[in-house]
Length: 473
Image 1 (cartoon, rainbow, N blue to C red):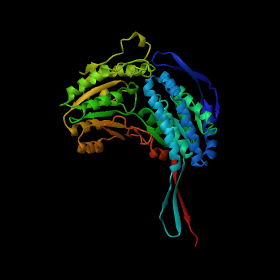
Image 2: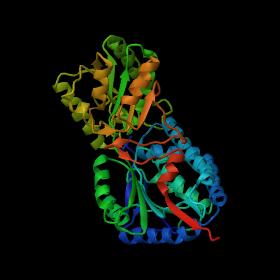
Image 3: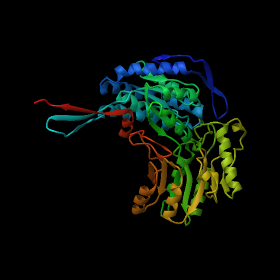
Image 4: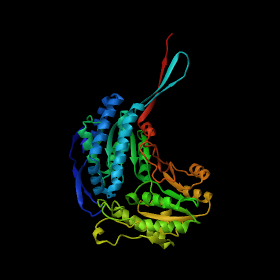
């Protein structure tokens, strides 16, 4: 691991396996409480000088990181594909997104503005924005590159320092990113990489009074535990948690566009994204036409090793992910759903050692099925029907989650109404990929709070200080 500008070994090691074939693709050391404490101390010490650097100086390091990532773009995509299975082309796009976050926040470092508030004649009142301090960051396996830079980049841009724990399922790409930090000679302690038992590492980060803020992307269950744990030190949190995104297609929608974007958004990363479309609602008058078009497009997808340039859908992250999908599909079929595409592990001898599941489409689904109310995190698209706008908006909102929602219509007024009424932090109208570095990403309800991306993401890493000066006459 990488602590205080040096590579260190751990107490033991972890094997990283390729979910496409089960083969070992690398090993990484695992650390314990002592090393995590060392990383926090290093970050606290570095904060004193890093936070006082001019924004242009911090940005100059970040520009170098972005340039080095561009040079290693293919290598980053390859190692990330090997360890978590996403198709190589999809991963190339993710690496570019990661670079965009570094570039964006290098520029935003210059724009952390305060305020001057009009007051009495004998006072000058300022609001200063200052870095919060040491930041703990916990990132997921499904976006092993972009989730790292989306947390680290805004933090170091404003002058914070970071202790990062990546997922045990995809640590190799994290290691490569930190090699880049080392190569550009980012000052020691500004960024630190630790990998160990998830509970142990998160407990140290939560309980340390030196860690002022914690950013987490992962399950709602773990997010709730972090909220409880943060109370001990009244730590600032930003949480990007689970989702259960609806995908609504109204009768006046462009069916071809909606199907194309559903297939692109639903089956990328084998459906293992928090913004993946989990419930597809199609107006009853276009239902049959939509399903036929969807079946045809899904049949064109190729399942296999993510490094195969012709593959669209790679494996799930592990066997547990496959079993969860199988259980949801079996439950739906038992309750009356019909499998019109996929619905099983692929019949391919070459894929038998991987955690694969065919891209699947279910029809005749209803709200009694587990898949209608639990996040799937797999390549399954259940298709519901609806009659009215009011009905479908109510169904779409009938979930504790509130991360992302998508709907398709060519009616301008309906577009405004539905966008207003959907209870989600992210809404795409005729757009299944609304996320870029320059926009805020984050949910509401049990999908978490706080924003990542855009200038809004900067606010998660600063404190606002009232500075009032009385003028002597």
